[in-house]
Every structure is written in structure tokens, then in C-alpha cells.
Length: 211
Image (tube, rainbow, N blue to C red; front, side, top):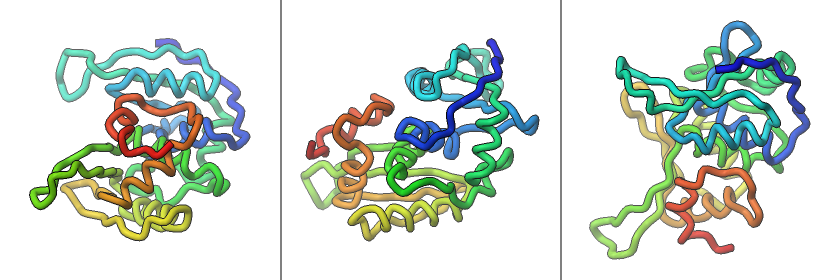
């Protein structure tokens, strides 16, 4: 897999905020202060990153957990200026447990949130035992409870969502939204003419969109 060094435009935009959301939730900053690594089961997400950042690096394949089957996709790219930018806004090489918040202009938070959900969140529909109607649920996982508390507070500041709860599961915490709060959040993330998103997750929630 080619490892190219790139100068990446760090001017805030919808596409940059989306990529930073993915990196914040599911990426890895190498200790060498240059390389960023992202692994996913969804090749589409890595292709979105390439397109959004304008990089040419190859998307490779890898295995995990002792398996020989290379069912994961991976991209690694080196960019000193982009790495420095990530450090300035709140990301670190050991960010999974230490990340607290990410500095960004308010207007790009919804794109950042969508990137976080695509990175290490999920959108699903379930039927409650007391209701016949399908209900929407959106969840975001993180090893840093402080990051999820910041996300919950920032979501409240940007939307009409007043609920949401955080639960602890083994080594991670999960921020949960359900029913009407999840619908508000979904419509906040997937606005009209939004360009970058993971089709698999968008498709699950599409029926709840008002646009």
C-alpha cells in the first residue's frame, strides 16, 4: 500500500468536518507525527475520505484478530500540515481514551457529527414491545466518556434535542438517542444536498427524513 506525503487543505468546510469526525471517532494518529490510519469494513467510507481530502493514496486490505481473511479496508496517508492541524483542534496519537472535545466553527458541527456516526456509531430501527410502530435509534461509541458528554452538550446547543443518555459497556461508553430525538438528530445530519455519507447507514434512517 502506497504511503504518500500530502499537503492537505485545512480550510474548514463540510467535507473537512466530515473527515475529521471519522478520524475523531475511528481513526488513528501515528506517534511519528505525520501519518493517519483509518480502518473500516466499509470501503465506501475510505473512498469518501480520499475524495474529500483530495489524496491519491491506495485503499488496501487487512485482517484483524488473528484471522487470515482480509475483510477490512485500510488507508494510511502522511501529511505533516494535516497532522499538526488535528493536534491543534484537539486530537492526539492516544486520543481514544483522552479526547475531550474538537474545536471547530459551529456551522460544521453537523458534518462532524455525521462523520462520527459513520466512523464509530450506528443507526438502527427497532420495534418497542409496547408499540407497533418502528422507532429510530442513533448511537455513538467512544472510550472517552468526556468526549461523549461534550458531544451530548453540543448536540443540545445545535438542535431541539433535549434528551439522550450515556451508558457504559465494558471498555466503551455509548451515547444514545431514540424516538423523536433520534429523528431530529437524523434530519440535522442529513440536510438537503449533503454530499458525503456512508450509504449503508443513511439507507437505514432514510424513511425518517423530512426532506
